[in-house]
Image 1 (cartoon, rainbow, N blue to C red):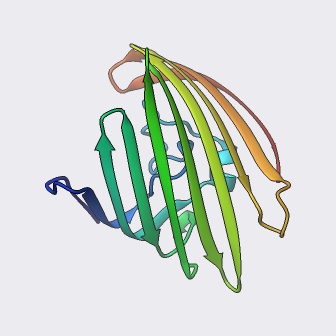
Image 2 (image 1 turned 90 degrees about the vertical axis):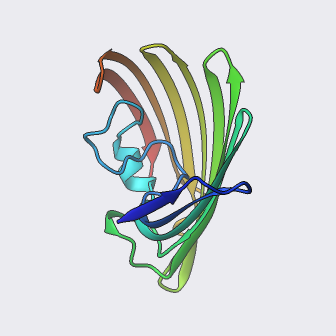
Length: 169
C-alpha cells in the first residue's frame, strides 16, 4: 500500500511501499510502459520497491525528490538495512528534459553508491530517452550501463518502442 499526499505547501509526501524516484529506467509494473523504460539494465541497477518515505516538490520546470527506505531489491521488497537518495529533473523546453539521481544503498555490511543521468525528448506521441547509470558495487566504478529508447504512443495506454542497451557489470 502507498499513500501520496499532495496537500502541503512545502512539499508533497509519499509513504508506503513504492519505487522511489532515482532512476527513470525502472518501472514498478512492467505493464505500464507508456511513460517509462523497461530494460535489463533497470533490473540490474534499478532500485525496485522499498518501504519508506519520499518527499517531492515541483518548482516551475524543476522536479526534486528525496527518499529513505528499507533498501533496494529489484525482485521484491527491499530487505537491506536502508537506502537514501535523491533525484532532480529539469524541463528545458521544447519537450527536452534532463535528470540526475544519487542513491546510497546499505547492503549487509557494505554500502553501494549509485548515480544516474538521463536525457529525454517527448513531443506528442514520440519519445526518446537516453539513460546512464553507474555504481561502485565491488569497491570500484566498473559497473555501468547506457540505455537508449525510442517510443511511439500508438493509442492511449499502448506504446511501441525500440531499445538498445550496453553495459558492464
